[in-house]
Amino acid sequence: MSSPENEPTLTTGADGPMTAEQAALLRRLAHDAYDFEAFGEHLTRSEAARRIATLQAKLKLQGEPPHTQ
Image (cartoon, rainbow, N blue to C red):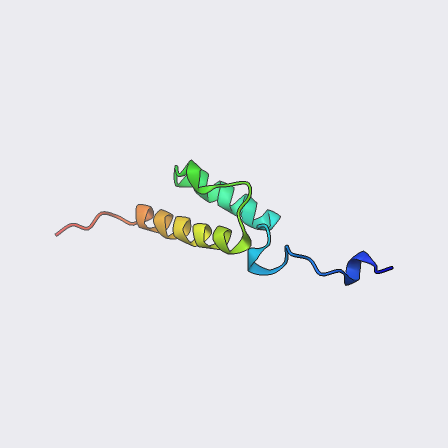
């Protein structure tokens, strides 16, 4: 009989579910950016990382002063 530690899992790596840290950060960034649809309960780690990067870039642009000439 094999132990659970030796069994392969399908939820590791980039295709696994997002981590609790990613979920907390994504939820906060989505709230700050007023983009509530960016947060999803069942995202993969890679999709959560993409959305986090996108929201961080969006918030950085929103925080910059408008370009004037």
